[in-house]
Structures are given as C-alpha cells and as structure tokens.
Length: 199
Image 1 (cartoon, one colour):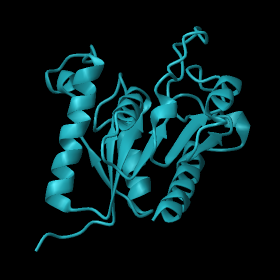
Image 2 (image 1 turned 45 degrees about the vertical axis):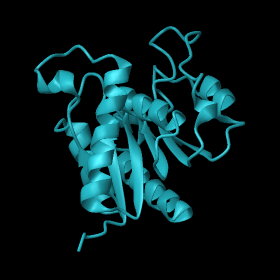
Image 3 (image 1 turned 120 degrees about the vertical axis):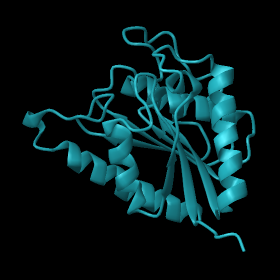
Image 4 (image 1 turned 180 degrees about the horizontal axis):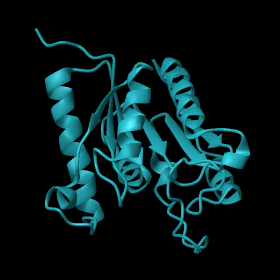
C-alpha cells in the first residue's frame, strides 16, 4: 500500500542557489514543521556544476518530472509546486500551462530584473487557476511593491504576503528589530494557514 503524504511541496531553487543552500534548507526545516513534506532538487545546470541557468523550457520540464515522480511515489493528498525566485517563476509558468497541482507557493517572485521595473514578468500570471501564496520582502529589488500589487490585485486565488523589511533573500536589517528567524517563522505560520484554507 502506498503511503499517503498530506501535502508535498516540490520546491525549486533560485538562479544562484541549489537544493542544499542555506536558504533552501532553512525553508524546508520551517515548512516541515507546518504540514509540508518539502522535496528539494537541483536543476540540470546545477547537477553539471554550472552557474548558468538552463533555458525556461528545461526548468519547467525538470519541475514537472520531479512533481510527477512525487505524485507516483508518495501519492500526496495535496501537491504544491513552487520555489524561490527563478525556481518559483518556472513553477508559476508550469502552473499557467495547466500542470496538475493543488497550489503554487512562491518565495521572492522576481517580478522584474534589478533596476528594470518596466520589464515585468507577469504575462502568464492571469492564466494560473490554482490557489497561490506569494511571499516577497518589502526591500526586494526584483519586486517593487506597487507594481506587484497592481499586477496581482485582480487575480483570483492569489494571496500576497509582504515580509516587512526583508530583501530578496529574506534577510532583514538589524535595525529593523526583527531577525531572519522571525521572517522564517512568519513564512511558516502564513503557509500553514494557507494550506489549511485550500485543504
């Protein structure tokens, strides 16, 4: 008999990261205590030891392959896809293609390149039909808050959660009075509540 996992989160890493980087491990540990079984993996370019990300079709296919394997081997009640920055963007594009999943969890969605807010990466977002929880820091140089709120305000099923004072890596300044651990805890609580709402 196949063991059923309640919610499996297939979590893709960012462009400069990998499955075992500090942020990915900390995120997996946090969400692991909040009802998520987090599956981390490396994109092909990382497996080859390269720093140059694969083309978007390759990134999307990799997430789809990992998710399909998870569905077959773990038979989860809920299958969530997503990830950090570039990985989350690739997962969002997969979801927009109607890939079968129960939700999309995005961490530091890169709405635009640094210093180029006119180049929005938002064209596919209205096509996403599954529930979305998206975390971005208010100091994220790849996601201007006013542009993100304008982009997502009319999207059905999209829940935006702003992390006060956090940057693209979810780090906060000491002067903020918060710690990186506080930010992770906030992510954990909000993710657990969202998961309950879509159960």
